[in-house]
Length: 179
Length: 179
Image (tube, rainbow over all chains, first blue to last red; front, top):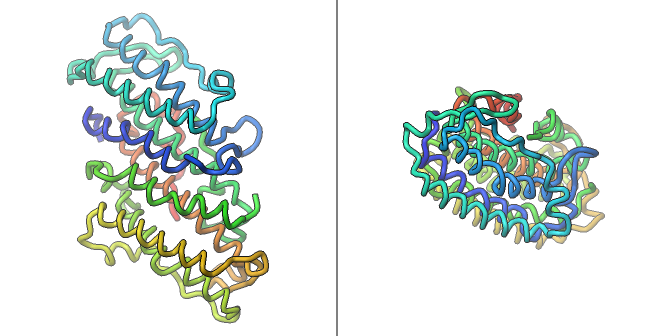
């Protein structure tokens, strides 16, 4: 499936409500649980999505649209949420993410993405040359990846509680999702 | 984490709203897409969840509570949705799932699950002896597994569109989720 602006936005604008439906008011036994050291809880992942929306996607799109191909994107700190949102509740992060996403989609709309613009290029600090189309498709896949990571870390809290059914539930046994 | 009735119900009652937030009104390019032959679309997976709620979880809980340990559970047809809901729209399936889940959680509440009841045993046709606690924990993990499967099949539609970012998104490259 090729990237298409309208189809992509349909996913992006649903992510905050999906996370709110899944997580709001859920006991911390679910939302603060990790899979061990250096793994993220649902709470951490919502913070990561919020931080990504605050500093990453639109900023990189602007760099590409300014046709500043020689300037690599700023590198992205994927663990910034641990300090940045310390003391924030999950509900606060969910509300902030909903607001930030709405603002970013309004900005994206103002940027008037055309097929010509989608072909413009930028330079990722590690991955090299990328197009605006690839950046915007990654925004979508990144949302879905992290929704998947949230349900996975929560499911794994029951890895033993399910008893012999563990063998039938791939989410409990395969290598864990990270960024 | 051990199975606890109240914690488990908190997940079960959020699943229909989560799926509705994620999928309602989404273009069929997302909801009907699979990962190839013998894999399921988001639409198929919602049907599977609905069918599971209609025939599986509460029925098996009843068999255990009737202490009919010698009688194996009826086997569950995990692909029944392909015929059963033919012609139903995704929106119809989402509404039906929401209603069926609400009914099942009311029934579960009436069954008054105590620690003593959670230890009661049944016989799975393939897995052998299981407890009510394991069955009810599996209901939760099964929900989360299939939410994960839905975001995975949708994300993979962009496996090529993301370009070099594919290397950073585990959801695009690891073995696919099934039941």
